[in-house]
Image 1 (cartoon, rainbow, N blue to C red):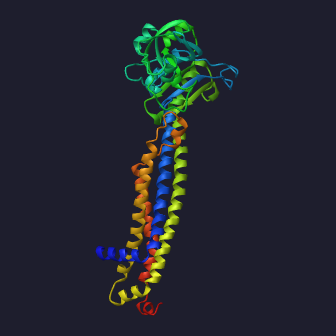
Image 2 (image 1 turned 135 degrees about the vertical axis):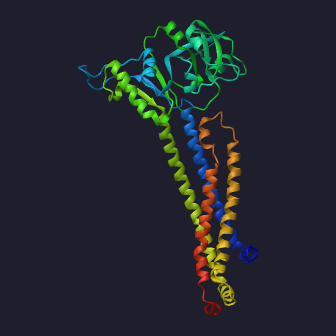
Image 3 (image 1 turned 120 degrees about the vertical axis):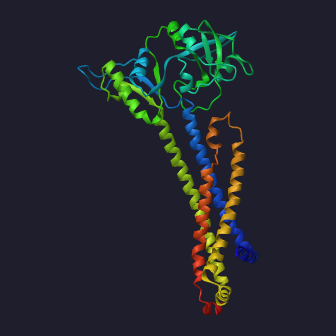
Length: 416
């Protein structure tokens, strides 16, 4: 049965070469559009998410704010300023908090090695800062550890771009000394290069990090710039956020519902919003591609109607000789599906080659191009495309096939 259908299909292709080629090309082009739009949409969604996670994952950055409501006899407009002890308070009072770090910050700090001098943002943090903010050290170095905090060591962790600015390209800074505002510090690590499009006080690549205890001892800060906490489960994020206001509100005597009393950067919610926007873009691109493929399906249906019309006498003879209507339907469905699936597979293969080629283009030196030249062809996308192709083939073939099967043998023999 299959061999007979294939022979008839090949015969029809020879008889209708131009029409078959144009239909095949339309399906190929439609598939190519669907796959590329979905792949670029997926790449854009991942890039936006990775850019956010480059600044931190599953964390809350907590800043002191100003009360906007009266509470317990105290007026509005009071300044809330956080201290180191607040981190211990949050970790002990909120069981869902898994990690935490203090952060002091200072702009315009001078860094000097020999005659080379530059200024950058300096931050004093704890060991958990590394995992929460994705500040992994490059090979051969390390981040700030507990011993550095306890002993108030003058050790320095440099952003990769700041290290290059101080020491130049190709120089390993590990173990070397840097004068920071007149005091010598030893470099213990350099940030591993990462993609980051969200930041607080500038990108991590252009900052330096020291132990928060050393920072406080040298510059005498009483209040922290902000605190960072990380819940062990992202699904508990809203509860943890509410607890932050409750616990700190009890200490500083402000209304837990006063959102302006604290500034909270909620990375969990930001990630959800980012993924939702990315998914919306991907759905829009997919719909555009799907409509393009639908037009190709209309082309397949048109050619099948023409084939049915031109082969009316042939269909009538087959029916008169005993062919069943399901055999006639199977013939035209087979032809429609074959054109749709074969053209689609060619389009899918072409799109895959384009995606691999574009993905291989270097974009590290141009962050803007990372959003454009970062298509991702995933298995779900491939399965969606295969499903669309099968659907297009069925829709394009079923109506012409039913029309062919409904031909009256007597009337078809008189058809010209």
